Image (tube, rainbow, N blue to C red):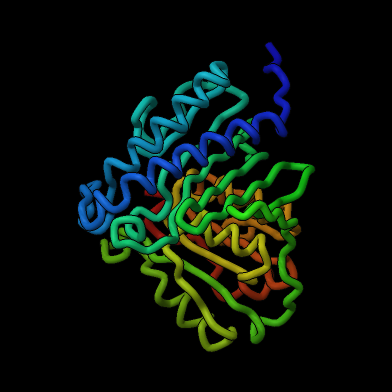
Length: 284
């Protein structure tokens, strides 16, 4: 049986509304929860009541609007933790709070991320950063946009940088960086840092990808990521004209646990410095 077609513009409107609603929940809870969080197992990997409340808003709304679709959400509030709720051609991939550590410590770089994948390929991405007042929207075939709280709407395009020496890059460090057999990213960082203009570590993979799409960063890589860390932002990068691969240069970035996103012209040069899948498997 063929799955019903989905109007991506209408689906994006639903997802954006839910992302904004969840963002309101996060802002309401931020001051009350500051400095308090639970550990997911590793002491540095945190979860809060705000994560769960925001996920309830998003997943509950998506289930109501798209009952035939699968849900893959991080916290397991209404669906299994980190697993697709069912087999379906269309799957929503949800991170209710990307950047929980930032959120807990009072940094404004956190976001609600919602993506829609068709048969394993993300085709729609919404990343809403409530504390920044910015919402990023990417829809396959319709480009990528950045919407500001004051009503401005900006069409996104990746940078035109062609040399690593002129590049502002970004990366991240996994929660499991000091566990046996894991790659702490220090070696890759050491190879790249002397060659680029500078490097940033924001603490939200989805926002890092959005900044590549916006032409702020020229490239970004990270390892040990889950699908909900990258699905939405990757749509934005691609719709803004950039390139997204895994660290072997292939297409395994969604479920393979590691990603490289660039403006395109820098991809080969950056891949040569940070390439090679991390030992110890993919996302955790």
